[in-house]
Image 1 (tube, rainbow, N blue to C red):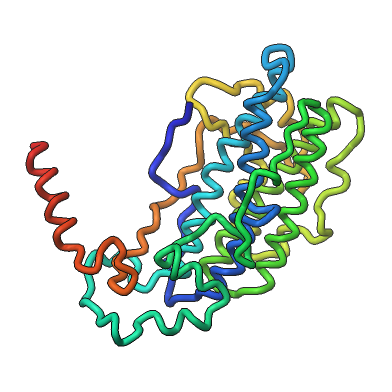
Image 2 (cartoon, rainbow, N blue to C red):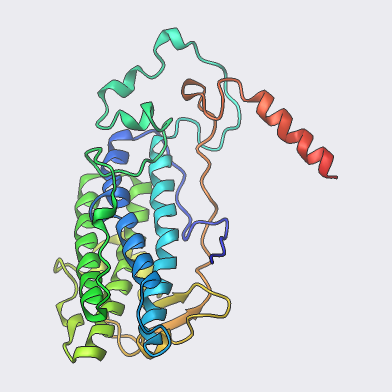
Length: 302
């Protein structure tokens, strides 16, 4: 089962203006072949299907725990996309708009009109070209070494796509999110590499980073490295997955410093509210009635 905390894993900067084309590019990091939906569902199903949960507990703990962190990663990428699409971030009410005046006329020229037609200016489970995420991206073989090898490849491929999207946009919200995920993805790649080394003797972490550019070269990633996030493997459970330290130990391939298991999630930051968008009827054209009903619910609960 899962315990959900109503916070993002980091605090995102508030958006200054809509940037729908940046949102379209960032979609690759959510629902693309190597996006966070893929890392989440690969590790989640591998943890569901894991053979020998007791005998091979350190490896089960690793895959299951990283899967849980990935839930927060899809939340963070979705929040980033929503902030790039938001017209009135954090605003509960706005003046009504005249639908006849084509208030969404600008959206016909953006890269992904589905954001505004299907999503109501929200994130969607798709890649950068509008292709929907699907279960064929999930690999769960039942063979531990093969699954770990796949996960190592998945993380470095995801890193490659993050770096390419970073190069496509200088939007500060997108770059903050990407910087953080470059660091956390580096932890996951290193963790799977250490797991493979313990099983095979092959020093997989010597191949890192892929591509051959250090996270310290990316200002938004260096910020989190300076805070030690590249050393931390967070244990996302009050009581379980306590054998992570049998694998996550020794030196970080990032800078040679000692890695550590941290009990509990990162402090994080507030969730993002895209605010009211009358043209999208989100949450309604005139939301007053909805808010009035909610107010009555609170009054009845007193």
